[in-house]
Image 1 (cartoon, rainbow, N blue to C red):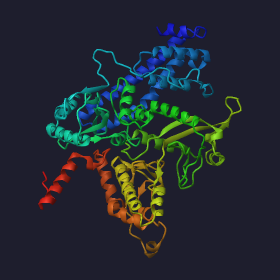
Image 2: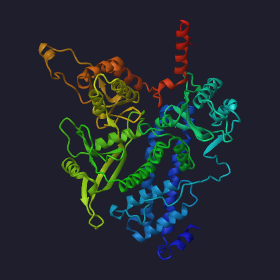
Image 3: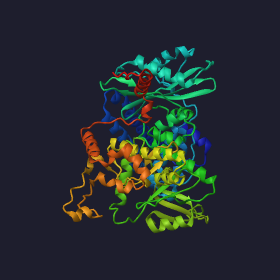
Image 4: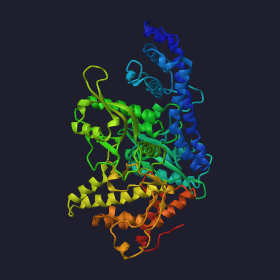
Length: 625
């Protein structure tokens, strides 16, 4: 029994008879949370089959709030039944030990430990956040957890084609194994395309004894897509893959593409995209499988991508503390143009930036701290379409004072004094910097710096010219993807966008974002007289929600090379018609596809390209259906 095991381990400490009941109440609170979390995820397949796209997006938003609601419920129960905030520290130490006993055979022990931390730190004063009763490190292993229930399905299914010629039948087993109720338009066609793509990716190979296809047992749902995720194993080689399933214009299903390799999977599970809905009995097993597909992606980001963002925050913070212990560089003011609303700093050796809301803003920034926090919450709950970076939000974060450059401390004192505390909390002579509220997100190269590096390379550097063109095209694509998701970025200056490792342009300054449907897109009115026409200033009234696309050019396109590329690919962004048409589309409740992969990877795009190539060879016209 858990109670007896805990008494055997710590015979002198376990004297409070309330501890076992408190531990059980905590675990019951977590179990309720994860039951509701799984229910929302499990229903994603029904919504996908019914083409309930707005319901799917609503479920993604609402599920984010589940965790905090259940934590509050657990706190209220512990306070009403046990007066938890008045319990002595010895009792909380005992509660932790009993919780460990209850988690021995639990299927989500790592999530339950994090839930325990959330509840106890909410109940108790932060000066008591001590290793003795919170889980600073995991106490229960997540290795080799098995679901022994009779009807339980394994984490992944394995299929065994005897030779490459049998893979077509294997792909059929894979797809039909999910039991999708809506029919495919032409499953034979789709499976043939998948099989041809897989064999081309694998090249010439000899079937080894372990030749198999492993597929995670649950589909991954997000927006309008369902994704099959797995890997082909042959000898020492493992080939990760994902197969997106969509609806055609008639409502029938089809496989849209075949994605292969760690980079394709990393883009699918990107920090700039909404969280997946996926039914998992043992989440740690899913994370372990996914890490075998994306070995360079931190476990924290994988947990977050699966909708377990609180666990992602816990693992991130553990990784961060580990990094601090094994590094010596100092936090500094982040390179680039300083923001008017956010104070941004980084640690050069750590691939993230830290953002603190300033206490004071210039007159042109008519906003408040609560409004800014609301914008960041909007982004977390919204479909980020691969174009808005996810942020982790922390409170009362402690850093070693010796790791801060003095210039950074003075910057925080000047612009965000309410967010800064420097103290020796433990009384050992070691000062800490405590930040009351901070956002942390992946570091990217600011787009303005990226472009400047291209300019500095000189006009004869062809690689730099290609990079510049790609960045400008990507910038326009980013804005158009945001528009498709009903987001107007507000401040569209280059400095508010970043370039990822894979050359993707992502937006990261959220204090001025608005819904497209809340904006008033208008033209510059005709000048009333010659004085208006010659004026260098705006002579017409502009409301707080007014947007005049014609005026974007002077702010964005001062460089002739940039202007030429932009106007060639994205000149429509300066036309009010573009914005108004998308606004009308969104108001009509249309949901536009924004693919987490290059559109050229789509089977239909490849077929069209092959048709054009064949036509060029024969001098004829490409066949279209």
